[in-house]
Length: 51
Image 1 (cartoon, helix red, strand yellow):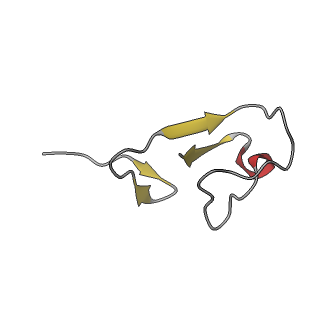
Image 2 (tube, rainbow, N blue to C red; image 1 turned 90 degrees about the vertical axis):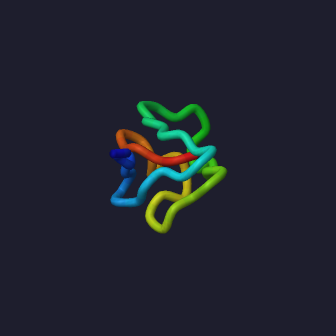
């Protein structure tokens, strides 16, 4: 039985990685793959995102 890893209730697909953002170096930088509620790096601090 295979268990899916979920990020914000969405399963990770192939060729993706889960990223935890602790700090940012360049504020207001757009994410390479934004989500509906995480668009710039400032939104991702202290949360998990998928890249």
